[in-house]
Length: 343
Image (cartoon, rainbow, N blue to C red):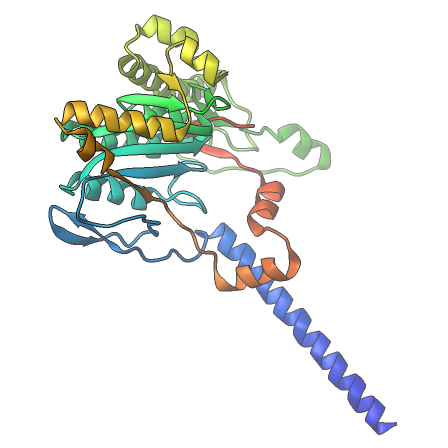
């Protein structure tokens, strides 16, 4: 009898321990998902004018380092913002800077698969790529499944844009919100909520204050200014008038064929074909022989995220994606003006 009690206690203790481990794993996983997405791997150094530079925000996946001339395949994947599981702004800007200062690097091929993102980050990358291009190097873009809104904005820094025949692109426009007015619901359930502010527009957009006409105009003016900037950049990049550009830039998305017909991309091709044409362009612009152009390597530069240890344990044990769980439960609110295609 005593032996059975002892066995049951051991089983109960083991079960309790397992429950505690799972609870800790869930909390750690969710906390990691909400607070910066955990750990970022270190990267090997890249050449910067002949000197090693440690790009310590992310991880390169490289085909070849050093020696011969090469084009960097620079991947822009997922939502463009400060940092998430597929994108890191600091890593991307550092990489562009290092490539600009690498004498062996002759160009960047942006490999884009993104619905866009925040106005600030998209414009920062666009300006960094323009500076890189002004140094005398080539920038091309290749669109994969989606290259919309802020991703298209960034790609306007490219000399030439290619797209897969199944690409969705465009969505040239700005989104900010939504704002939620819950005052009717609060009144119905007997809840009173008050903001203490220093000015009549300080709390505009909060759930417990209906937007006034003045506040609607203020928020729309922010969106309109960002839109004008976007439209002007597209017009300049695609050599169109602003009027012609705005007729296309009503927020809609385009197929690759429609984008080609409207002059938003240059050609529909496979990535391999785009790379062959980039080699031909480099041969002409840099006076390379066909043998020298064929010897140019395309080297992958791609941000690689590593989830926190406890989160990986939780996901492997449960088969549940914490990121997907958080996105589904909390949704994605656009807190700042964004060049983002939502679908």
